[in-house]
Amino acid sequence: MEYLPEEKSNIIKSYLYQLHETGIIINTITFVRVANNMLITFLFDANLSYADLKPNFKYSLTENNVHIVLDPSHMVKLIRNCLGDWGLLFDKNNKPIKWIYFKHLVNM
Image 1 (cartoon, helix red, strand yellow):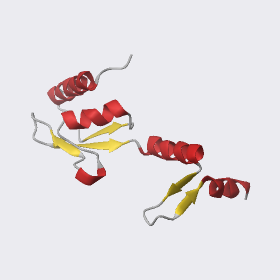
Image 2 (cartoon, helix red, strand yellow):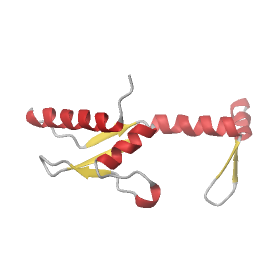
Image 3 (cartoon, helix red, strand yellow):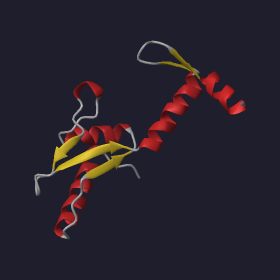
Image 4 (cartoon, helix red, strand yellow):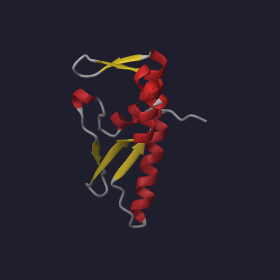
C-alpha cells in the first residue's frame, strides 16, 4: 500500500514524537528517492533540490535539526540504471560518461 505524502509525513511525525517520549533523539532520516518522498521534504520545510538545498528541518519538540539523507546505495542504483538505459550521460564539464566504459571495465 502506498501512502500519500501527507500521510507519510504524519506517520513520520508520529514516530518522531513517540521516539522523543522515550528519550531517543533522531538526527537523521534516510529516504530512497521516490517522488512521494521528495514531496515529504517540502512538508517538513526542507528541500533536496540542488538549487535550493536545505536538507534538514527543525523538529518542533526539541528544536534540533533533523537531517534528510538520500540512501546512497539506492542513488547509485538509480544512476547505474539510468546510464544503462540511456547509454550516455554527461558530466558537469559536458564530457560523456558512456555505459560501454563500464562494460570494458568489467571485461578487464
